[in-house]
Length: 437
Image (cartoon, rainbow, N blue to C red; front, top):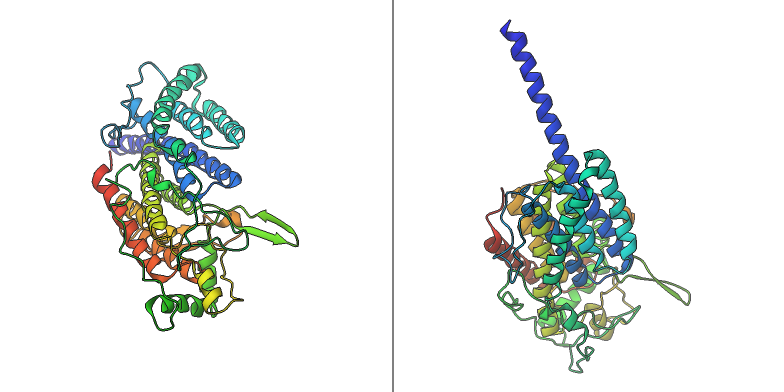
């Protein structure tokens, strides 16, 4: 008689475990959906890569802190670990922590978007769907109020990151010295976020703490190091393989891409470099069937790394203010040459994608391991096939070298940028680790 009883207990236990896991992944699925909504609106509104990093940051910190405040997430608050981060009171009373978290995400996220109603409406539909699944209608008002409580604290903290102050600074003035950056075709857009180094860092002691070694000395003389770097870009880009073209296209991530038809110019909307890595964090979390606590941690830490990486990168971009390959090659090698990718509207050194990818990959490697293989489907909505990577670092290396294939960076910006980004990621790990619950 013992075997049937043991078998029954085993079935009951495994069934309960399966149900529990299903609930965990169901909760996380709502957060992943919220992240997708945020990305869709960021792309639609055409935010610059640095600004997009800020938009990702605060909503995900709001979710994480809501879960901590409700006792759902046993991890540590960011209070005392991020500069001037608010002490958020524990949420008392009976609420639904998932509904509260989604509401915190909605309230926080909409404050940074142009199409705020579009985002807010999508989030409200998501919250209503979760109410039905979770049978939490009676807890709605208390849960929404709890989410608002956290969101309000995060928004006050966000308002002091010096973003508003940088909006009021005088426009960037082009330098007239040889080798300095100039706007590039086809849009000849003015310099983007020249004062981003003034934004409050989260884990860095200063924006310049991981400044890379100086860019190669500018020269137009054949045979000099700088001329050789430009010639490498030209040579590689005039004989790209199909694989190199695929790599360049996959990691383009240029929100400023302009399509020209006759006398008409219009934007071809694309995800930002930071957005691409936030989507990678989400797809890996889905692969791991993580709980909402684990998924929230992955999003928050990746967002922090990306945010600090842009501050670090932009500090050096407007310190060196280096000329882009397109400008140099057209002036000194081949006036008719055009890169495969459109050149983004900011100075060349270092490569933003390299810095951001290095930082994000370092944090994700700490979370999921050195040899975590994944299929990246981030660019599927933009008509590009998936790519498979054996590790986050391999993905970051491909993202970095894509800028050479695309014709928009010299090699030092790529290699030194990747190293710079890894230092930023290591600082995030050092300052905020150990991770886990």
